Length: 314
Image 1 (cartoon, one colour):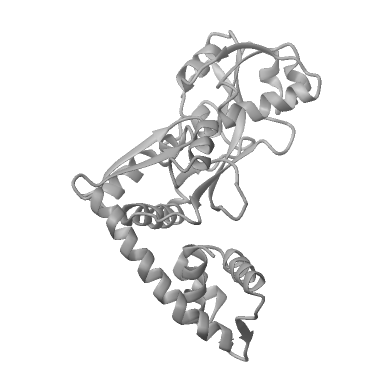
Image 2 (tube, one colour):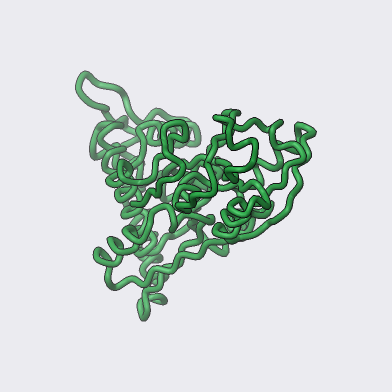
C-alpha cells in the first residue's frame, strides 16, 4: 500500500464524502473511488458504508486510520531527511516532454516564482522515451509526459490536450483542402520531430502502418525550422496546434488531419511509492490549480474555425 493511497483514504475518512475528498486532493472523484477499491481489494475488507447523508467508516476503517496516520508520520520524517539534503539551494528539477513550457507560456513560470521565490525551478524538456526510462530506473519520481503509465507503480493525472496538425505552403495543392487525410500524405515531403518525440512519431507510425510512404525530409527538435520548411515549400510540417498558430506566417496555412485521434494528451506522473520532497509536492499542487484556473485562457484549438494566418498568444 502506497503513501498516496493512505493519503486518499484519510481524506475520505475526514470528509465522509468521495466528492469532497476529491476536491481537497484536486483530483477526480473517479480516481478517489478507484483508490479506495484498490485498498479494499488488497485488505479484503469493506472500509466505508454509504449512509443517508455521508459515508460511514467501518471498524476496519477505524483500525486502518490509526495506523495510516502513524505510517504517514514516519514517511514525513524520512521525507524531511530528503528535503534537508536539498535545503541549501532548493533546486527543483522537473522533466517534461517537449512543448510544455511553450504551451503554458512564461506566465506559468512568473506565477510560480511569485508564489515560491525560494525555489529555483529547473524544467528540462527531453524525449518521452528518455523520461520513461528515467522513471523506470527511479532516477526521477515525477514528470510530465503524454501517455498514461496506468499501473500500480505510477499514478497519472490528466492536465490538458493538444491537437496534431499540418503546416502547408499556400502553393501546395493540399492547401486548398479543408482537412488532410493520411492518404493525401503518400509520397509527400514531411518535416517534423524525430521518432522519439510523441507529437510526431505517433502520426508517422500510423502512416507506415497503412502502407503510406511519406518522404521524410527533415527530423529536428527545432519547431521554427519545421515551420520554415513549410514556408519555403520544401516540406509539409507536422507539429502541434499552438506551435503552428504561433508562427504567424503569411506563406502557410494550417490544416487538421481528417482522421480522428490526432490528439496529444499531457499527464502529470508520479511514483506511488516515492517520497516526494516538499518542493515536488508544492509544484504538483501549484500545477494542478494553475492549469484549472487558466484553462480558458490557454490555447484551445478549433482548426475549422480559426484563421490560420492570425497569431494567437496567451
